[in-house]
Length: 66
Image 1: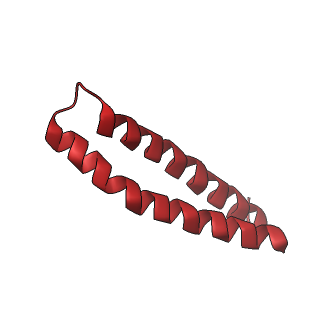
Image 2: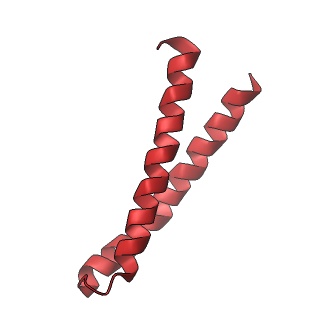
């Protein structure tokens, strides 16, 4: 892929990967098998990944308008 097709595939992949990562962090932050430090770390990472996900979705939305 190249050009717009590459960009579209790339942003779709970024959205998918961010959604999966957020889900894993949410699970890790509530998993009773994890120690408290792991839960805390996972919890602190969710906000920044969610912000990145929202940015990626905005980029996709702008790309779809073209």
